[in-house]
Length: 335
Ligand code: PMP
Image 1 (cartoon, rainbow, N blue to C red):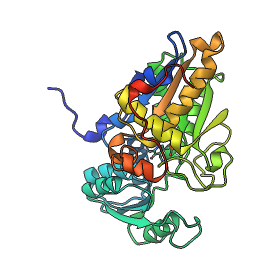
Image 2 (image 1 turned 90 degrees about the horizontal axis):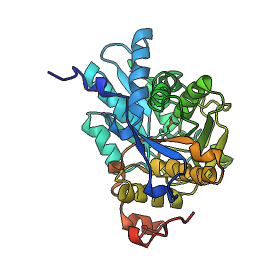
Image 3 (image 1 turned 30 degrees about the horizontal axis):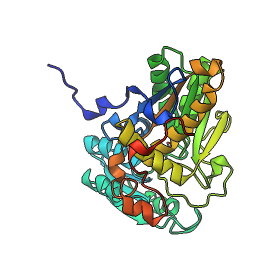
Image 4 (image 1 turned 90 degrees about the vertical axis):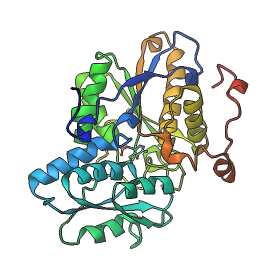
Protein backbone atom coordinates (compact mmCIF):
# COMPACT_ATOMS: atom_id res chain seq x y z
CA UNK A 1 0.00 0.00 0.00
CA UNK A 2 1.17 3.50 -0.72
CA UNK A 3 0.43 6.07 1.97
CA UNK A 4 1.97 8.49 4.43
CA UNK A 5 1.20 8.41 8.14
CA UNK A 6 0.89 12.19 8.39
CA UNK A 7 -0.04 14.96 5.99
CA UNK A 8 3.14 16.69 7.18
CA UNK A 9 5.15 14.08 5.29
CA UNK A 10 3.83 15.64 2.07
CA UNK A 11 5.57 18.99 2.65
CA UNK A 12 8.27 19.95 0.13
CA UNK A 13 9.58 18.34 -3.05
CA UNK A 14 7.30 20.57 -5.11
CA UNK A 15 7.68 20.31 -8.90
CA UNK A 16 9.12 22.72 -11.46
CA UNK A 17 6.78 23.71 -14.31
CA UNK A 18 8.01 25.50 -17.43
CA UNK A 19 6.46 28.91 -18.09
CA UNK A 20 5.82 29.51 -21.76
CA UNK A 21 2.96 31.70 -22.98
CA UNK A 22 3.23 34.38 -20.31
CA UNK A 23 6.88 35.07 -21.18
CA UNK A 24 5.92 36.54 -24.60
CA UNK A 25 9.23 35.32 -26.01
CA UNK A 26 9.92 33.46 -29.25
CA UNK A 27 11.20 29.88 -28.89
CA UNK A 28 14.86 29.46 -28.05
CA UNK A 29 14.93 31.95 -25.18
CA UNK A 30 15.98 31.13 -21.61
CA UNK A 31 14.26 28.26 -19.81
CA UNK A 32 12.00 29.70 -17.11
CA UNK A 33 10.74 27.23 -14.51
CA UNK A 34 8.15 27.90 -11.83
CA UNK A 35 8.53 26.16 -8.47
CA UNK A 36 4.91 25.50 -7.62
CA UNK A 37 4.59 25.81 -3.86
CA UNK A 38 0.81 25.65 -3.71
CA UNK A 39 1.23 21.88 -4.04
CA UNK A 40 2.33 21.74 -0.41
CA UNK A 41 -0.50 20.26 1.74
CA UNK A 42 -1.30 23.59 3.45
CA UNK A 43 -1.24 25.29 0.05
CA UNK A 44 1.90 27.41 0.33
CA UNK A 45 5.68 27.61 0.72
CA UNK A 46 5.11 28.45 4.39
CA UNK A 47 4.39 24.83 5.32
CA UNK A 48 8.13 24.37 5.13
CA UNK A 49 9.06 26.94 7.76
CA UNK A 50 6.12 26.07 10.01
CA UNK A 51 7.25 22.49 10.58
CA UNK A 52 10.87 23.51 10.98
CA UNK A 53 10.13 26.25 13.53
CA UNK A 54 7.83 24.00 15.62
CA UNK A 55 10.28 21.07 15.58
CA UNK A 56 13.01 23.37 16.87
CA UNK A 57 10.80 24.90 19.59
CA UNK A 58 9.78 21.45 20.81
CA UNK A 59 13.41 20.39 20.90
CA UNK A 60 14.48 23.50 22.86
CA UNK A 61 11.52 23.28 25.27
CA UNK A 62 10.15 26.72 24.25
CA UNK A 63 6.93 25.01 23.14
CA UNK A 64 5.50 22.70 25.80
CA UNK A 65 2.77 20.04 25.35
CA UNK A 66 -0.67 21.68 25.15
CA UNK A 67 0.87 25.14 24.53
CA UNK A 68 -0.49 27.95 22.35
CA UNK A 69 1.20 29.17 19.18
CA UNK A 70 0.78 32.95 18.65
CA UNK A 71 1.97 34.54 15.41
CA UNK A 72 1.40 37.67 13.30
CA UNK A 73 0.81 36.22 9.84
CA UNK A 74 -0.80 37.15 6.57
CA UNK A 75 -2.31 33.71 6.41
CA UNK A 76 0.05 31.23 4.81
CA UNK A 77 2.39 30.79 7.77
CA UNK A 78 -0.72 30.46 9.89
CA UNK A 79 -2.05 27.62 7.78
CA UNK A 80 1.26 25.79 8.04
CA UNK A 81 1.43 26.34 11.80
CA UNK A 82 -2.25 25.40 12.26
CA UNK A 83 -1.71 22.17 10.34
CA UNK A 84 1.23 21.12 12.51
CA UNK A 85 -0.55 22.31 15.68
CA UNK A 86 -3.59 20.20 14.82
CA UNK A 87 -1.41 17.11 14.52
CA UNK A 88 0.43 17.70 17.76
CA UNK A 89 -2.26 19.06 20.08
CA UNK A 90 -1.39 22.78 20.28
CA UNK A 91 -3.81 25.75 20.13
CA UNK A 92 -3.22 28.62 17.70
CA UNK A 93 -3.98 32.36 17.76
CA UNK A 94 -3.15 34.33 14.61
CA UNK A 95 -2.91 38.08 14.26
CA UNK A 96 -3.57 39.38 10.71
CA UNK A 97 -3.54 42.85 9.12
CA UNK A 98 -6.98 43.93 7.88
CA UNK A 99 -5.91 43.88 4.20
CA UNK A 100 -5.69 40.09 4.34
CA UNK A 101 -8.65 38.58 2.52
CA UNK A 102 -11.59 37.16 4.45
CA UNK A 103 -11.08 33.92 2.50
CA UNK A 104 -7.61 33.52 3.98
CA UNK A 105 -8.80 34.23 7.52
CA UNK A 106 -11.55 31.63 7.13
CA UNK A 107 -9.01 29.00 6.14
CA UNK A 108 -7.20 29.58 9.45
CA UNK A 109 -10.49 29.30 11.35
CA UNK A 110 -11.31 26.07 9.48
CA UNK A 111 -8.14 24.51 10.93
CA UNK A 112 -9.46 25.40 14.39
CA UNK A 113 -7.36 28.54 14.94
CA UNK A 114 -8.46 31.86 16.44
CA UNK A 115 -7.92 34.97 14.27
CA UNK A 116 -7.40 38.55 15.54
CA UNK A 117 -7.58 41.29 12.87
CA UNK A 118 -5.52 44.54 13.20
CA UNK A 119 -5.37 47.77 11.11
CA UNK A 120 -2.76 47.94 8.30
CA UNK A 121 -2.50 51.72 8.28
CA UNK A 122 -0.66 52.11 11.61
CA UNK A 123 3.10 52.20 12.28
CA UNK A 124 4.76 48.98 13.53
CA UNK A 125 5.34 50.64 16.94
CA UNK A 126 1.62 51.54 17.36
CA UNK A 127 -0.05 49.48 20.20
CA UNK A 128 -2.68 48.18 17.71
CA UNK A 129 -0.12 47.14 15.08
CA UNK A 130 -0.23 43.47 14.40
CA UNK A 131 3.32 43.06 15.68
CA UNK A 132 2.46 44.60 19.06
CA UNK A 133 -0.86 42.81 19.48
CA UNK A 134 0.84 39.49 18.88
CA UNK A 135 3.60 40.38 21.40
CA UNK A 136 0.96 41.00 24.06
CA UNK A 137 -0.78 37.69 23.30
CA UNK A 138 2.54 35.85 23.24
CA UNK A 139 3.37 37.01 26.78
CA UNK A 140 0.51 34.89 28.19
CA UNK A 141 1.53 31.70 30.07
CA UNK A 142 2.02 28.65 27.79
CA UNK A 143 2.22 30.83 24.68
CA UNK A 144 5.06 30.63 22.18
CA UNK A 145 5.65 32.99 19.27
CA UNK A 146 7.57 31.43 16.39
CA UNK A 147 8.33 34.92 15.01
CA UNK A 148 8.93 34.12 11.38
CA UNK A 149 10.58 37.58 11.04
CA UNK A 150 13.50 36.68 13.31
CA UNK A 151 13.46 32.88 13.64
CA UNK A 152 16.64 31.45 12.03
CA UNK A 153 14.75 28.22 11.30
CA UNK A 154 12.79 30.15 8.65
CA UNK A 155 15.75 30.76 6.29
CA UNK A 156 17.35 27.50 7.48
CA UNK A 157 14.44 25.41 6.15
CA UNK A 158 15.02 26.98 2.73
CA UNK A 159 18.79 26.50 2.95
CA UNK A 160 18.38 22.85 3.84
CA UNK A 161 15.36 21.92 1.74
CA UNK A 162 13.99 24.35 -0.87
CA UNK A 163 17.44 25.30 -2.22
CA UNK A 164 18.75 21.71 -2.50
CA UNK A 165 15.51 20.67 -4.23
CA UNK A 166 16.03 23.30 -6.95
CA UNK A 167 19.68 22.39 -7.36
CA UNK A 168 18.80 18.71 -7.74
CA UNK A 169 15.78 19.32 -10.00
CA UNK A 170 17.83 21.48 -12.39
CA UNK A 171 20.84 19.14 -12.17
CA UNK A 172 22.90 22.10 -11.02
CA UNK A 173 22.08 24.07 -14.18
CA UNK A 174 20.09 26.85 -12.51
CA UNK A 175 21.62 30.24 -13.38
CA UNK A 176 19.05 32.67 -11.90
CA UNK A 177 16.67 32.47 -8.95
CA UNK A 178 13.75 34.92 -8.69
CA UNK A 179 11.50 35.26 -5.64
CA UNK A 180 9.38 37.75 -3.72
CA UNK A 181 10.44 38.85 -0.24
CA UNK A 182 8.28 39.07 2.86
CA UNK A 183 10.28 37.88 5.84
CA UNK A 184 13.12 37.35 3.37
CA UNK A 185 13.45 33.75 4.56
CA UNK A 186 13.03 32.25 1.09
CA UNK A 187 15.50 34.50 -0.72
CA UNK A 188 18.06 34.32 2.10
CA UNK A 189 17.96 30.53 2.57
CA UNK A 190 17.60 29.46 -1.06
CA UNK A 191 19.88 32.22 -2.34
CA UNK A 192 22.68 31.40 0.11
CA UNK A 193 22.45 27.67 -0.63
CA UNK A 194 22.59 28.21 -4.39
CA UNK A 195 25.52 30.62 -4.14
CA UNK A 196 27.36 28.11 -1.92
CA UNK A 197 27.01 25.60 -4.78
CA UNK A 198 27.90 28.09 -7.52
CA UNK A 199 28.76 31.72 -6.69
CA UNK A 200 27.82 32.78 -10.25
CA UNK A 201 24.12 32.06 -9.69
CA UNK A 202 22.21 35.33 -9.74
CA UNK A 203 19.65 35.88 -6.98
CA UNK A 204 16.92 38.36 -7.89
CA UNK A 205 14.28 39.71 -5.52
CA UNK A 206 10.90 40.88 -6.77
CA UNK A 207 9.31 43.60 -4.67
CA UNK A 208 6.10 45.66 -4.61
CA UNK A 209 6.69 49.33 -5.46
CA UNK A 210 6.70 51.15 -2.08
CA UNK A 211 8.41 48.39 -0.04
CA UNK A 212 11.78 48.98 1.65
CA UNK A 213 13.49 46.15 -0.24
CA UNK A 214 13.28 48.14 -3.48
CA UNK A 215 14.13 51.46 -1.81
CA UNK A 216 10.59 52.53 -0.89
CA UNK A 217 9.42 54.10 2.35
CA UNK A 218 6.99 51.29 3.20
CA UNK A 219 3.99 53.09 1.68
CA UNK A 220 0.98 50.80 1.22
CA UNK A 221 0.54 48.44 -1.72
CA UNK A 222 -2.11 45.81 -2.24
CA UNK A 223 -0.22 42.67 -3.12
CA UNK A 224 -0.22 40.39 -0.07
CA UNK A 225 2.58 38.52 1.70
CA UNK A 226 5.50 40.41 0.17
CA UNK A 227 7.26 43.72 0.69
CA UNK A 228 8.00 45.23 4.10
CA UNK A 229 8.11 48.55 5.90
CA UNK A 230 11.11 47.40 8.01
CA UNK A 231 14.17 45.17 7.58
CA UNK A 232 13.49 41.73 9.16
CA UNK A 233 16.32 39.79 10.84
CA UNK A 234 15.52 36.86 8.57
CA UNK A 235 16.54 38.91 5.50
CA UNK A 236 20.20 38.51 4.57
CA UNK A 237 21.10 41.78 2.88
CA UNK A 238 24.16 40.27 1.21
CA UNK A 239 22.34 37.66 -0.86
CA UNK A 240 20.26 39.50 -3.51
CA UNK A 241 22.24 40.62 -6.56
CA UNK A 242 19.36 42.74 -7.69
CA UNK A 243 15.78 43.71 -6.77
CA UNK A 244 13.13 44.27 -9.45
CA UNK A 245 10.27 46.55 -8.45
CA UNK A 246 6.80 45.54 -9.67
CA UNK A 247 3.62 47.64 -9.47
CA UNK A 248 0.37 46.26 -8.04
CA UNK A 249 -1.19 46.69 -11.50
CA UNK A 250 1.46 44.50 -13.18
CA UNK A 251 1.38 41.95 -10.34
CA UNK A 252 -2.39 41.51 -10.59
CA UNK A 253 -2.58 41.50 -14.39
CA UNK A 254 0.18 38.90 -14.52
CA UNK A 255 -1.49 36.78 -11.82
CA UNK A 256 -4.58 36.63 -14.04
CA UNK A 257 -2.47 35.72 -17.06
CA UNK A 258 -0.83 32.82 -15.17
CA UNK A 259 -4.28 31.32 -14.52
CA UNK A 260 -5.59 31.83 -18.04
CA UNK A 261 -2.51 31.18 -20.12
CA UNK A 262 -0.44 28.72 -18.04
CA UNK A 263 -3.35 27.14 -16.08
CA UNK A 264 -1.54 28.05 -12.85
CA UNK A 265 -4.10 29.44 -10.40
CA UNK A 266 -1.72 31.26 -8.07
CA UNK A 267 -1.66 34.26 -5.71
CA UNK A 268 -0.67 37.88 -6.28
CA UNK A 269 2.89 37.54 -5.02
CA UNK A 270 3.32 34.80 -7.65
CA UNK A 271 2.15 37.17 -10.37
CA UNK A 272 4.63 39.72 -9.05
CA UNK A 273 7.57 37.26 -9.02
CA UNK A 274 6.64 35.80 -12.42
CA UNK A 275 6.40 39.31 -13.89
CA UNK A 276 9.93 40.04 -12.64
CA UNK A 277 11.10 36.70 -14.09
CA UNK A 278 9.53 37.64 -17.41
CA UNK A 279 11.40 40.96 -17.41
CA UNK A 280 14.64 39.10 -16.65
CA UNK A 281 13.90 36.56 -19.41
CA UNK A 282 13.53 39.39 -21.92
CA UNK A 283 16.90 40.81 -20.88
CA UNK A 284 18.52 37.36 -21.12
CA UNK A 285 16.96 36.66 -24.51
CA UNK A 286 18.81 39.70 -25.88
CA UNK A 287 22.26 38.12 -25.32
CA UNK A 288 23.68 34.84 -26.72
CA UNK A 289 24.73 33.50 -23.25
CA UNK A 290 21.41 34.55 -21.78
CA UNK A 291 19.52 32.24 -24.10
CA UNK A 292 21.08 29.26 -22.27
CA UNK A 293 20.03 30.57 -18.87
CA UNK A 294 17.89 28.47 -16.53
CA UNK A 295 15.70 30.73 -14.41
CA UNK A 296 13.72 29.35 -11.46
CA UNK A 297 10.94 31.53 -10.06
CA UNK A 298 9.25 30.51 -6.82
CA UNK A 299 5.45 30.81 -6.75
CA UNK A 300 4.48 30.84 -3.05
CA UNK A 301 0.75 30.07 -2.94
CA UNK A 302 -2.56 29.35 -4.65
CA UNK A 303 -5.04 31.74 -6.23
CA UNK A 304 -7.94 30.23 -4.28
CA UNK A 305 -7.37 32.65 -1.42
CA UNK A 306 -7.85 35.64 -3.75
CA UNK A 307 -11.01 34.79 -5.68
CA UNK A 308 -12.83 37.76 -4.12
CA UNK A 309 -9.94 40.13 -4.91
CA UNK A 310 -7.48 39.62 -7.78
CA UNK A 311 -9.85 37.33 -9.67
CA UNK A 312 -12.83 39.61 -9.11
CA UNK A 313 -13.24 42.29 -11.83
CA UNK A 314 -15.23 44.59 -9.54
CA UNK A 315 -12.54 44.52 -6.86
CA UNK A 316 -9.85 45.31 -9.46
CA UNK A 317 -11.95 48.11 -10.98
CA UNK A 318 -12.47 49.65 -7.53
CA UNK A 319 -8.69 50.23 -7.38
CA UNK A 320 -8.49 51.29 -11.01
CA UNK A 321 -6.86 48.10 -12.28
CA UNK A 322 -7.73 46.43 -15.56
CA UNK A 323 -9.03 42.86 -15.51
CA UNK A 324 -6.96 42.01 -18.57
CA UNK A 325 -9.51 41.39 -21.30
CA UNK A 326 -9.60 38.35 -23.55
CA UNK A 327 -6.36 36.46 -23.95
CA UNK A 328 -6.62 36.54 -27.76
CA UNK A 329 -6.30 40.35 -27.77
CA UNK A 330 -2.75 40.23 -26.41
CA UNK A 331 0.08 40.92 -28.79
CA UNK A 332 2.68 38.16 -28.65
CA UNK A 333 6.09 39.71 -28.22
CA UNK A 334 4.94 42.78 -26.34
CA UNK A 335 7.10 43.79 -23.38
N1 PMP B 1 4.19 35.32 -0.90
C1 PMP B 1 3.27 35.07 0.03
C2 PMP B 1 1.85 34.92 -0.40
C3 PMP B 1 3.65 35.00 1.37
O1 PMP B 1 2.72 34.75 2.32
C4 PMP B 1 5.00 35.19 1.71
C5 PMP B 1 5.43 35.17 3.16
N2 PMP B 1 5.10 36.35 3.87
C6 PMP B 1 5.93 35.46 0.72
C7 PMP B 1 5.49 35.49 -0.59
C8 PMP B 1 7.39 35.78 1.00
O2 PMP B 1 8.18 34.76 1.52
P1 PMP B 1 9.31 35.06 2.59
O3 PMP B 1 8.63 35.43 3.87
O4 PMP B 1 10.07 33.78 2.70
O5 PMP B 1 10.15 36.19 2.11
